Length: 365
Image (cartoon, rainbow, N blue to C red; front, side):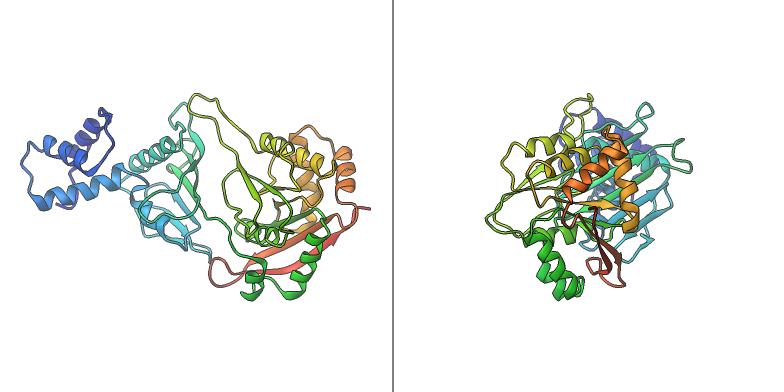
C-alpha cells in the first residue's frame, strides 16, 4: 500500500497519542502492526512507516523543502496552496495535503516543537524551531501559524528558514552585491564608529549586509549582538550573541530583545547591535548610543529611506517615547553622520545576490 487508509491512520494516531515514547520507526511500526492485527507484509509496513513519518514526525511533507539550501520561505494557505521562495519570488511548491485537518495537525505539531500551544483557545502562534536532523541547515526556522476561522479558507503556516549570515564585505563586493563606492563609504562609517542602520524590505539582504559590515569592525572591539533568532555570524574575533526567547506554554519565561539590550549594556560592549529593530527596544538602543556606546547598528524594515523616521516614531511609541523625545535622541546619537540608510532590492538570480540600488546619508544636525 502507498498509505494507510483513513480509519487505520486515525487508530494509529490515537494509539501513539497515548504513549510517552519517542516516535521512532520501531514505535510506529509496533503501533501499525497492532492496529492491523499483526497481518502486514514487509513492503506494506515500509510504505506505511514512510507515510506515518510524513504525517506524524517533524515538518512532514514540508521537510524536503526546508532541507533545500536555496529555500528562504515556505507558506501554506490551506491544503491545496503551498508556496516556496528560493530567492526569486514565490512559486508553487507542488505539495498538497489531504484536507485542512492535516494542515492543522502539522501546525499544532510544529507549535508543540517550538514550545507553544495552538488550539481553538489560542488560534495563532509565533515560535522558533531549532535546526534539526535530516539535512535541515542553519539556525532553525521561524514559525507562524493561524487557525480558521481567523484564517479564512484554511489553516495558514508561515516558515522562514534562518541561516547565519557569514559573508564578509569583501565577498559581497566580489560577488557584485555591493558596489565598490558603497563599500568604501560604509568602511569609513564603521571605522569612524558612527551609528548606522541598514534598511530594506523583506528578504532584501539587510542581515547579510549588516553581517559584512560587522566583519569590518576593529578586531580589538567587543561586539554585542542582540537578536530574536541567531542570524548574525560576522567574521570577527570578539562577538557575543544574545538571543531572545518567547514564553513557554504556561505563558512565563519570556525574554525580549529589549531585555537583552539592557543586559548588553552591562557586559562592557564597545558596540551594541540589534539584528532587527522592530519594537520598543529602539528606546534602549538609542539610550545606549547616547551613553558612550558609539558605533551601534541594526536593521529596520522599511521600503525606502524616507519611511525610516515614521517607522522609528511608531516603534518608539511602543516604548513610551514621544516624537519630540525620539528626534532629540536621534540627533544626539547620530550627530556627525547620523544615519546611513542602505536601500536594497532583490536582483534576478540566486537568493544571496542582492543589489544596492541607492544609498543615502541623512544628517540630523
